[in-house]
Length: 64
Image (cartoon, rainbow, N blue to C red; front, side):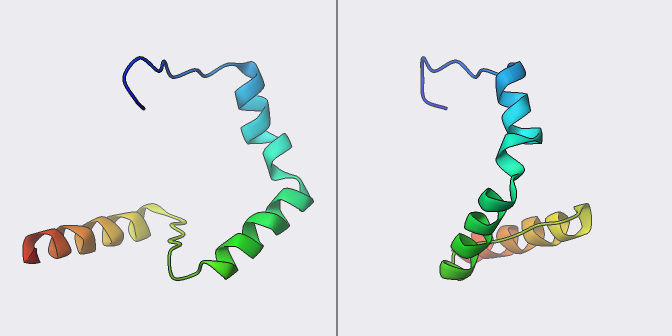
């Protein structure tokens, strides 16, 4: 977030995350985008994958 931009979490945003943003059309669009930019996309599905990803990022940082 940039300075002066307040983070907002309200019922409308929660509704979009939980229902409106998960329509079949939106899911297809997201899948298409992931396929098009697969070299730039990382999908983390569980804590084990997240831990592994973060460990690899730390290794890369130390090399630089």
